[in-house]
Amino acid sequence: MFRNQYDTDVTTWSPAGRLFQVEYAMEAVKQGSAAIGLRSKSHVVLACVNKTSSELSSHQKKIFKVDDHIGVAIAGLTADGRVLSRYMRNECINYFYTYESQLPVGRLVVQLADKAQVCTQRSWKRPYGVGLLVGGLDESGAHLYYNCPSGNYFEYQAFAIGSRSQAAKTYLERKFESFMDSSRENLIKDALFALRETLQGEKLTSSVCTIAVVGIGEAFHILDQETVQELINEFEIAGEEAPVAEPAAPDQAGVAEPAAPDQAGGAEPAAAADADDDNQAAPGDQGAAPMDM
Amino acid sequence: MTKQQANWSPYDNNGGTCVAIAGADYCVIAADTRMSSGYNILTRDYSKIIQLADKSVMASSGFQADVRALQKVLASRHLLYQHQHNKQMSCPAMAQLLSNTLYYKRFFPYYAFNVLGGLDNEAPKVLVLHSSHPFWTTNSSLQALSCYLRRMQVTPLSEAEAIDLVKTCFASATERDIYTGDKLEIVVLNASGLRSDYMELRKD
Image 1 (tube, rainbow over the protein chains, first blue to last red):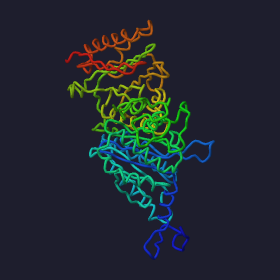
Image 2: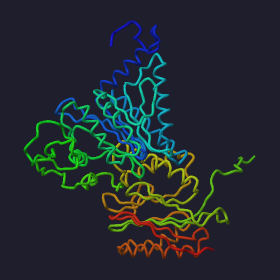
Image 3: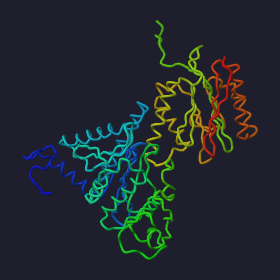
Image 4: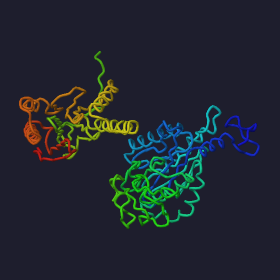
């Protein structure tokens, strides 16, 4: 983006009718590491890429549980995201205290959007530098919303934000029509595939990504690393790199053959993928949401 | 000129009795289900017991509106704790929270008499107003039941014996106390989790 004379504070319009500070805030979202959300009639899956600043550090938390029925994935300034998650949690708790029922997702995102808008119209504030993918369940079904630093929000069938999210969006645009009636497993599979697109060739392992699910009868929770790795192996989407002849390698299910997800491929993987023909193989269920299946 | 007295009280006593006993590896929390006001019975089927966390169960007698408000405040605070600490509150932590919450309203109190029972690092405890006891009772049948429960201190009881003791206590309290009766709700907390049981009491 270019520097110009109308971008000093958020309360200055440009002659073209733009608020540059708000647009710069949206740039911050684009610089963050990718976050993806998809939903079906009964489930919402949030997935994000974990980026560490160095090998020595742990990765930043990008997915937050807001309530049993709502979770959020963020991209951008994670500190802003953390603060907004705290706000969302408080809102859910207070709503439940007053009404003894769950805060509908649509209400929460409006409150969030209004909060973001305030920061675009006060000279002593700055816009939040974080984009939020809010996934949740309420009486009217499963919902996925995207909240923007500008104060806008939209509902989506599937969406991706952050760096290299366009690659994921391209994948999602191809497949989104099938999501509404997708099973939970297929939804997670599509999330993993979409996530892999943003990695641009890097290998997809459970240490690089975080997946969270919420659905009917299933409270929002983040899947643990082993479960995610098993799912990656099962769907054989580790990566398109050179086939490794090492069958004992724990994170690879042998040669990645995306065209034949059901078969175990040429090599005999010693890893978790078993010889089940059925895609809904048992390993994916262990450690996954205990209420499911 | 005598001091002016209030002609309306914000409080009412809905009666009832609560008991909690901690044994070697279990905790029993029990309360009757009668809700009264004066000489009237408002309902025969009102639970005074609530599970606040994995290992904390609270029973409260007194003014049930205040009890309910207190339960809601503690539940909300527990939810917040879980978000911040990624784990459930321990029983002693819950007891401290209860104590602080009650003190917060020191000058317009929650008219709630509470017993908090639970497991603390797998060791059962009964906590009353932040002191630890092997057993405690509240409200209506306070004095009467305490005598029976003193038996606990003499010989350690097994879980089944403790439940039996509680049932006998309540049956006996029901005879003499007009505010106790209808049904007894017993909650048992042990290593394998939580279970509920009910026993009919005299309805008069």
